[in-house]
Length: 179
Image (cartoon, rainbow, N blue to C red):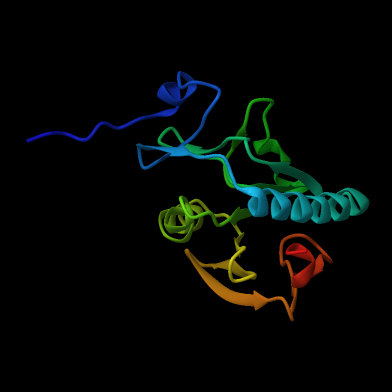
């Protein structure tokens, strides 16, 4: 019987720097570079977050690639990361150690199954308070809020406004994300 190889953070640090990787439950995933619409949405949404968070002095916003270490065997690079001032002690010069307040993943054909499935479960298990999944093809944003140990979600389309429970006073017209 063949045993599955489990990777950890020390293995992760030895990977080539010219590629993006994640480790979830000890399994290694290569993350391909994003396409044009993914990059456009990432920049737009990051700018909205950053401008609001800086203006209100609410915390810190980061974009991939920046490591989030939930454990030695759970290392991810979400597209957008928000850490509130209250939780800023999890930010180190090399990575974030612990659960950010809000994570955003923008779906790509090669990562969508993982973003919707295993990562959603991982983020809930580690206590991420809010998780957004942005779908460029459908032009929707699914916002999941942690209730107990699981996420409850709501889908927003381009005709909607959405607000964050985690980033105080942030309201976004969804169609702005996809312009």
